[in-house]
Amino acid sequence: TQLLEQSPQFLSIQEGENLTVYCNSSSVFSSLQWYRQEPGEGPVLLVTVVTGGEVKKLKRLTFQFGDARKDSSLHITAAQPGDTGLYLCAGATGANSKLTFGKGITLSVRP
Amino acid sequence: DTAVSQTPKYLVTQMGNDKSIKCEQNLGHDTMYWYKQDSKKFLKIMFSYNNKELIINETVPNRFSPKSPDKAHLNLHINSLELGDSAVYFCASSQRALETQYFGPGTRLLVL
Image (cartoon, rainbow over all chains, first blue to last red; front, side, top):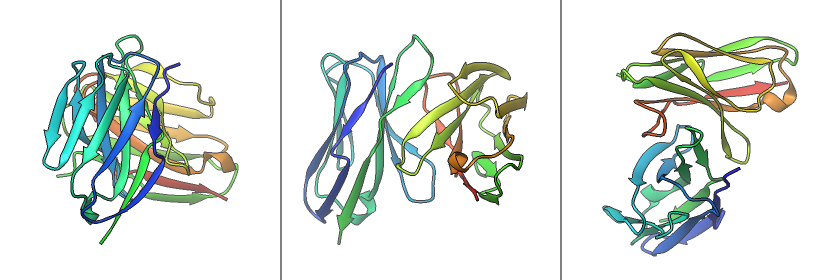
């Protein structure tokens, strides 16, 4: 069973602060996806990382895939209240054709 | 136009009842999914269909029966509802397995 551990589970910060959150596993993934889910809605894809060591930027969000493809981090620069939501990482392996989701990180950015 | 739609959005029912949730996607995707998100926000896959064929069936009670009449629709029927079935159920679709998944707005099921 592939498990994805996300940390921290909850994070409450002030607008303008920087933060980094993590998604870790003992399993190797062929790709890893990050989703954001806002209250009352379904998750929406932010980014997919495929190559070990890959870094992708989406405006103020920076995603990195670990060299061994077992972990990933998300760094947000100058957080804004609009960044508030549940951040889910999901790992894919070819073996079972399904995504395994982590339990998510609940981020609250206070104005 | 909504890419992935689900009905109903809210469902409140008594224990023991049978209910269905419907899902439709207009993205032309081949693969559709049902997920259950519990009160702690953990999103767990239940079923996956590819071109109307079941490809993933996680450890789900057989009271849950998915049906895919065509590749744009995936419905979920639940028999003999239990208190523990209360959750948000999300339908999703992707062009192929493991690619970007597009989620519906969710169905909030409350079993009393």
